[in-house]
Image (tube, rainbow, N blue to C red; front, top):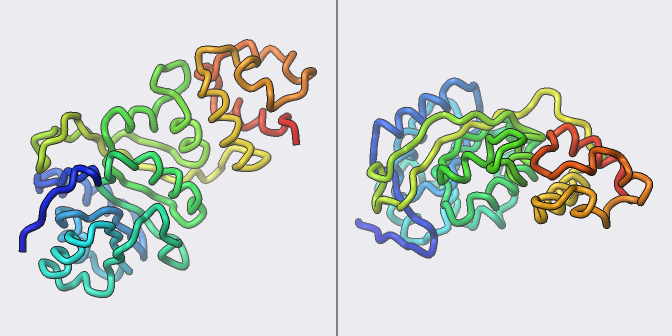
Length: 252
């Protein structure tokens, strides 16, 4: 059985087995009992993952044609392949689980935000992203790549850039370089008033990143708080700890 590639789903399937092995090698440095693959597509990673012993493995795929191809090509997937939209799916396991995948580039940020909702159950994420997105995820303050994804992911996870993947490693080759990154949950997370407050503050601040923070987030703080010198800075100059501490001063 063959399958077709759907541009509407951002499908670029990995074909380079050396890259697959490098991703699997990064995964196997961790101990885990449950594993979720997001977007198995043509099964490049899946064919390795289904043979990991003594784990509960599941994969989630939106495209009906790929589901049928995978079930026919890899019979071990029967009972383990969820034909669902990851962005709408409920948490697939009780207990902690690792997430892995060559994430569809057109929804990769949304996938990360969904994972953040599950962060208490997901200690490790190993994912492939468009290089530009990967750089944003791992970026530090005072860098043009530092933004909403950087702060919201790194508030909860340590983010490490593992390696780049050339367009020639995919069918069809994307127009961009890809990158694999690893997220490991922080043992000691920054203290915030609430995740909702942090998300609101960070998104508001970076939506007008060229402005001083005072002007960008004026609606979120009382006037006396806005007199503090930290509000003279721009969003990209604040550390994750700065954003976290400011949540306690926001209007209730």
